[in-house]
Image 1 (cartoon, rainbow, N blue to C red):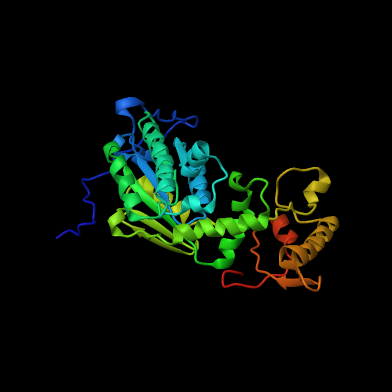
Image 2 (tube, helix red, strand yellow):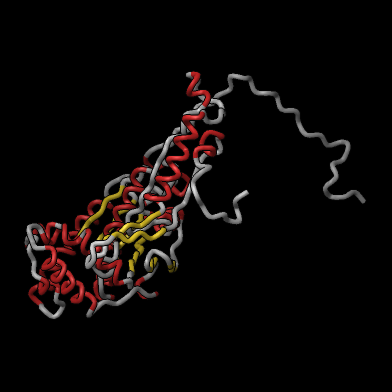
Length: 348
């Protein structure tokens, strides 16, 4: 009995003619219209049933708008997918002005609630018109959407589009992070233009408490959703499909606060001295001196957090972790050789 992996003598693979050296086939042309290639292959799906609407959810100052803006930038630039944000706050300012008191966000005030619902419905209407445009793939509704009732209303309105609706909730329970977000971002919005920063901070805290009193977190009743908790923990429920999964993976690698990157050229190499380009030459004496000075800068600036004590005025310096990256070229590794760093298991 012959082993099933053994090829019999009578079976031979057909010979393949070698391709000419100048073989360079043209790229495939993606058709338009009804015969278009499904974006499940190239980034989504052309059918209306595969369009995606992302509905943001969460208390103020938890990074919702930042996440929404980054998603749109990612989809538009990297995947070339036509995407747009519909921010309910912009509609509220358009209809009722930017200087709304904290009481405007009180859920027990029926008059103000009707105005806020008007702004939300206007944003929804424009979102729906946008999603009906041929070629559009993704729309983002940016608002707090604090209650199940409001989210159920949104799902009901969007039902006629037959799009995938995914809720994305940003949760932050770190007081320091919330306060930093309010001071750095919220008090600089049009709502608080020309307002004293301390008064703006106090008013926004009142506004946030109005939402917090009635806030209901996402659950299975809301359908497919993703929760982002302090940008550290992620809960994904019933999110399926190529494009939604791309969004999920992208959001899981976001940071709510800015990160600082320091970029440096390598020190002068032997080839630099000779006017040569490329190669893998080491550093000259001048290049090594640059590497030593770079190490000092890395230790005193990059890897050091400096704060001023408000009471004494003294400078407080605390070491902070930093990650060092170089290419595999000799000149870059020699440039980084004097920088102090902890050894990890991956170091050789």
